[in-house]
Amino acid sequence: MHKQGQVMRQAVYNIYMYRIDYLQVFALIKLFQFILIVPMTAIVFKLMLRVTGYTHITEQNIQSFMVHPFVISMIILLIMLMLLFIYYEMGFLFLMAYYQQRGIRYRYLHIWQQLNRKVISFFSIQVIFFIIYIALLLPLTSFIFPLTLTQAMSIPHFLIDEILSSRSGRLLYAVVVIVLVIVGIRSILALPIFTIQPKISILRSLIQSWRFSMRGLLELLGLFAMIVTVHLLVMLGITIISTLPLYILERLIPSTALVTAGITLAFLEMVFVVLFSLLQAMFSQVMVAVTVTYNTSVLGKSRFTPKFKKRRYKPLSFIVVVVFIVLSVMNSISLEKSVYAPDTKIIAHRGYTTGNVENTISGLVSAASTGADLIEIDIQQTVDGQFVVFHDQTLRRLTGKNGVIANMTLGELKTLTIHANGFNDKISSLDDFIEVAKTLNVSLLIELKVHGKETEDILPKLVEKLKAYKVLDTFYVQSSDPQMMTQLKKLAPNLRVGIVYALNIGPMDETVDFISLEEAWVTDQLIAEVKQQKIDLFVWTLNKDRSLQEFIRKNVNGVITDLPDIALDIRKKQNEREYFLQRILNLLQFMF
Image (cartoon, rainbow, N blue to C red):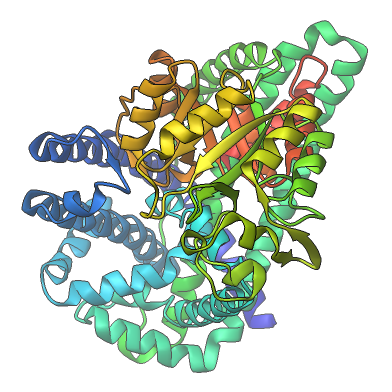
């Protein structure tokens, strides 16, 4: 414990003494990222679309897109660009920490040159080991280095949800996560070792990190836990103290709330950026300190002592004040616009599955009782040409029996009992659902699942059914088959028709009424584009408070969720009666 405390004190001391250096380096990193990395990535992607002739990339065309020779070469280029950015960003911080701890005077140019000497490794077989290293550390680096390129990388939630939908999937997921975390932690010192030691290879760095973890892993984890705990406590303390004036003024002098909220948010934004930068610096200091401790025979010791120059703070203070004023004005304008209640539709995914089995009449009734605006259900065509409400192509997950929906009649399916989460129910037809929905005065979002054995007249049959029940103008129909939905729109111009995408990259230009897109691919630019084209946007499947708050705040046309009651409560709170303090806390949650 004494040794850990000594490492922490030295890290804090170094960051304080070199605070201007860190501010400059972090500013340069962000500037480089936004001026070069982000625009270059966008340009390369647009170039790939132009060369291949695609307008945007979806799950339908991604395979043919990815095998195009030009696309392959550009993807390799982007991967190399990303790896080099991560190497330079993290390597710069590691070398700074090493020189500071050894008392060696340094210049940015010298660090840059030292990093350049090892760039050759990225154009050899060694790059494979670096890719493996980054892949292993991706879950950790997105948290440890929250201001880097890695934070935007994540696995789409729907993939994880599908894996976790079964017991075997949950077990497999847990095992994989545990293995990756263990291997990732044991490899975490590979990059600082590779950066600091002048002649070591990436592979040898991984081996050394693995060997070290046999002795010092608990010590390293203890230091990480200490840093994170202190960081969270400081963030919490600053947030409480800085929002206290707004809390009081909103209740006593409401007319001052907007300006106070804008100033408070600007202050917290700047403080949080600084705190996350300090967190990144602290991790760099600790990792280097531990690396040096266990590699003294290789690294040796230095006799230099640090010399500090007197810094001039006037230019920095002026920049900080200007940024603060600009942020305060921008935040005040944004918060003023946010006082209007969003009209995002809350769509219950497969009914209300809490306390019910998915795609059942009971789930429909429960979803309607919560007040959901739309209730999403899945339908398939049976062997006798009827429509059954069921999601999977097979019966295995919900009945435990073998059987394929496309090979069974509606009568056979309606006799089966389905079960999930301790609840049992029966399979129903589309007619049953429409009749109950009309009684409850709720609209359905019908997703047509295509299994390949449908009758040629499936779309006319569906249109006639909706017309017979007089719901053609109030119901919605969607499918992941764009051609079928285009045909359906031509058959029934008054029916609201949409396309479901699990993936989309690039601008969309559709002839349907709405698109349903997985949340990982929804960007602010896409939201603006579809609004301009007057196409509605439904986002799926949102089951986290943060995601629901984000997209309801952005006022997308609809959110598809398993938790319609929570989504409705969030929408209700985002109106003119909600205090600015809550809006600020929500915004900070989105940003950080």
